[in-house]
Image 1: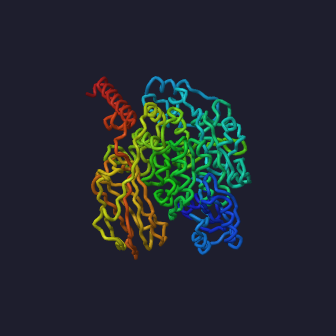
Image 2: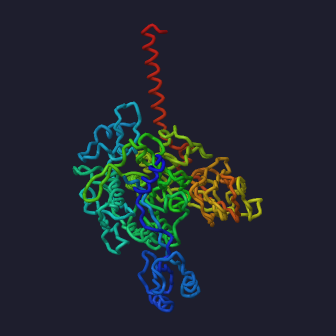
Image 3: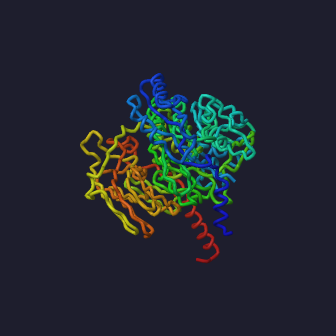
Amino acid sequence: MNLWILSTLYTLLVCHVVSIRGDHFVNEWAVEIPGGFRQARDVARSHGYEIVKEIKPFENHYLLRHRDVPIRSKRSAHHHTRRLEKDGRVRWADQQVEKIRRKRGIISTDDIETRAYTDLHFNDPLWNKEWYLHDSRTDTSLPKLDLHVLPVWARGITGKGIVVCVLDDGLEKNHTDIAANYDPYASYDLNDEDDDPQPRYDPTDENKHGTRCAGEIAMVANNNKCGVGIAYNSRIGGVRMLDGRVTDHLEASAIAFNHTYVDVYSASWGPNDDGKTVEGPGPLATKAFEKGITEGRGGKGVIYAWASGNGGRLGDNCDCDGYTGSIYTISINSASQHQHTPWYAEKCASTIASAYSSGAYNDQRIASADLHGRCTTQHTGTSAAAPLAAGIFALVLEANPNLTWRDMQHIITWTAEYSSLKDNPGWRKNGAGFWVNNAFGYGILNAKSMVEVSQNWVTVPEKYICVVGTEGTQINFPQTLRSGQELEIDLQTTGCKGQSNEINFIEHVQIELDMEYTKRGDLAINLTSAMGVRTMILQERPLDSSKDGFHKWKFMSVHSWGEKPAGTWKVKVRDMKGTDNTGTIKSARLIIHGTKEIPHHVTESGGQRVYNDEYNKVKDERDERRKNAVHLEKFTQGLF
């Protein structure tokens, strides 16, 4: 058996599969009945249903169960759904689908900064293993290759008053390194419908994922146990939702759980990272994201930190994941201890930044709490990167609690550290001068820079949406695409200039594509912005043999952040294989999110982004000193 097969088998064995099989319809319907509970009860009775429960936190939404429909089936009971939809008392109905959800772990220099690295010490036994929090290299001429949290802690910012909720497989709330920071109001068990998020224990300790993620964020400092959480004075809760059947209504209840109380959610899961799945939030989960963004934190919006996915070995692309591809989530990828792309990391245009995690076999992993009160140094994957990001967001919110969800994304693009990763391929400068990469987004999160920038932050202007449809192109749809061909769609826009939704500063860009194709995995899609910057929206996925195509799927990119929208945008769809493929592109839309006014931090800085080029500056100075030292030594030896 060759090495590739062994490696693949190992990956399949060590990854947690939440559900034994996906794509099964269940005998439950999520419905919206505006008339209230009594009317919902009447509707249920008249169509042979029973009310299971109200779906919180949504008003007039209910979960119905039909007694004559199989508990699980590959076939939908579409006639039942149609009957509900035709009932005038029902606004909306959707039969629930059991989903596969995979946990994204792989089991198996100022005075303050200088003092922080020399004076901050903790008695926690794993502190010396938390290399990503305090770079332990002895060469003081080099900048720190870590998340730069020590200078933030040295200023007394440790997550106080911020509530973080981990959406996962449970939380060992009585763990000695978590208990003091545990918050019951940020916790719930959606699998067993009770207030206790304690994980289910079994011989394999399968449900350790949530506790490990929570520990990274909020392990108690200086208690002689495990390590130090990145926001070690924050409040931590957990929603148990991945240890049972996962449906749209369950995800929605998790995503919007106590959303007026929680500040930051951390999610290290998503659709199967198998290189062939295209899936995003259902109708209710989409509503839940919107509720969290519009109602959370007093209308400023909660922060969703989301792991970008571990399907790199299988050629997966996280733009086929509608959770990381949502404009509402902050998609976080991994960088290794040696500043490289890990073997498991996916590449996509929706990833905004990276945090550290495991890399090559001999790289250190992430330290955290573990089940049964134990500790671990083996947490891995983007599962470990996203909670580190969530912890940093907690620090930033303590520094400035008035930040909105969009402010946080602006601060990330403005401060992420690309310089230490610059030797990796794929970096390019966008039209606004931002360095960006499909593997790392805008770079490694830098807690110190984020906190510093946030403290005098002026809220970004109101966001608008400008949509360019088929009227913005010379192509008449539908268009045929065949093996080996490339189709270019040119979309003209003024950025809705002169209209109420005029945009002059871009944030997110979406390409909505509606097409059929005989083998979806042979397609590659590139987007060239009006300022001439090309971005990979979709790469070829060899394992995706689906004939489903893309049905109004929104590919999201953050790579045009800060650019001007006016001009011609080019969407190129290409068959990469040259086999017997054929298909039809029915429509394409360009959806631009951004602001009319230029954000304050852009005008104040003259448009110069904070690049954290300390690394390059110090490295160049060090190299120059070494070169001079060599010249001096040779001179004294009479070699010149």
